[in-house]
Length: 243
Image 1 (cartoon, rainbow, N blue to C red):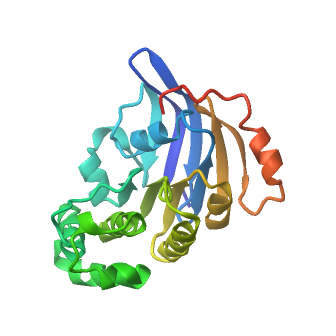
Image 2: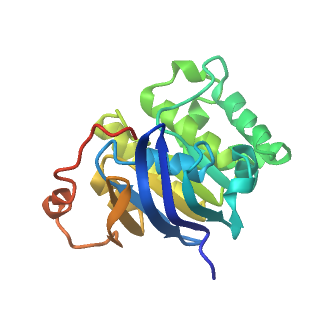
């Protein structure tokens, strides 16, 4: 069976500044892949290229056997590639349920929004409690849950999560990680980027370490490599590059 996502020799940047330098990786049909590495080394740029929010300079990205370059970001969402970007981006004057219904309609799944919302509430019970609350009044963790819930409403086959626990307290981060584990049961494949290395390794099947815009190390997420050994791969990297 072919991979769900295949990235080959991808380069990208901003103006004269190169960020990705010939990166290649793949995601299988039913696996979760983690991306690790310091800030500013290309993880977010890579995700934006995959979801067609940023145009690469060269290389190829294939999703479900088709080149993504001829498809818009909206088309990719309708075909199952859903990107939940860093930071909760919600409509503050909508209730939680209205935001979820809007996400279902925007992704072309409006006729099944009731089933979709039931699925989201099963994964995020707290959102069911907040269903009539304005998203602008939610806590940080609840806003992130709402963002992930909107991603689920698009019925993804590949769900991309960029820093879902950024800025959250340890307690809320733990709660959200349990929700992401439940998301894994609903979605065929996931790409997860997060600054919490242990969280990424606990929630994925494989990982890639990205430094200076390229994959420098890969392995199974049940690796016996210690945290200190993993961190040594990050030393010496510049955090000043644009991500």
